[in-house]
View 1 (cartoon, rainbow, N blue to C red):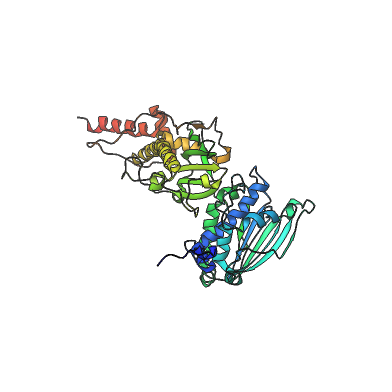
View 2: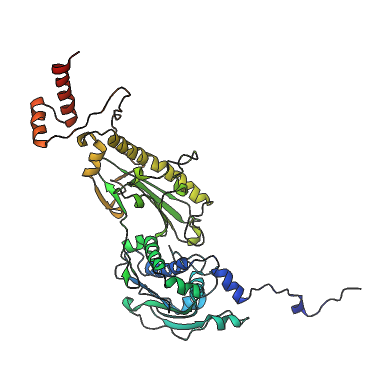
Length: 453
């Protein structure tokens, strides 16, 4: 039977567009509640960066309220303009012709929408920008039943207003009719504690630069980004530019700080947002000798190690992280390249810390522990106060010292305590300057006078 050519062109179409409910379920399936809230905080930080490109965020604040009844995030970080809301902010994906916010964290333009869908089925947004303001209300369930219309609508909007003072600009988002799993987690005090610590850690650099963030009234604190400053040691520093196509730079610092076990390791930032850290696994080279390209396994001996890596790019898509921004893209050639440099930079720091361990294990008196003495006289200062010209070198450096004398198999170690005043008299009588010589000379004297050969 001959084919009959269908003249109605519409009947040639095989529909492949997703249903809204399927789209929403797939959009939020692999997104954790904590990451959803993190995405909303990222939007506020992007606003702060646009408002103050020099990254001094003093006076800017993000307030989060999470309860079983509602979720609210409110900021004074510049607001969303009506044009941005209309053309980009609520579209599912970033249009190709929309210029990126230089140094932003948002990547695909879906973070805010999927975060709101993750939280609940009703949300309101009010925002005031420099010359415009708007409000909108969305019932997600009603929106989902309209199969053909994917657009949202303003409840009200005003454009071309007179310049609005900076301190009046900001955004308030409220989500109600929360999903049951969200209610359960917001009712769990342990979840709120984890949310607090993880948002605090992710934004430690932004908080360090003055941004205030609070959750249910409790203020997040910045962890100190510090390194030891000393005339005797130099922090390792390396930087690299990935070219005009990517417009991405990386800076790496490797040095030492206060001996805090849980804070040791590598910290990797992408556009000032902490992605991993403190990182103490093979991701950043702590392989435990299992591979030829790594270093030792992280443990207490290395609790002074601090490594800071800062990737910065005009486009977030150039950064070597994963799409949920909670880890690095381990297959990224750029990250692999930088990781190799990190491993090389950590090696002299490891050597320094190994030498300090040798000093301690040989029970040398304090005046014969030169590296420990250096650390006692050094000061910990903020990373921002480290001079790249005066306090750093291509690799971490410390004074060249003679090998630590190790105990031989036919030797015994003698350790005892005596009153300091008496020891000082003996030291003076012997004409020696350190406790080791006091012990050796007094032992030799007794042996010669009382034992002999």
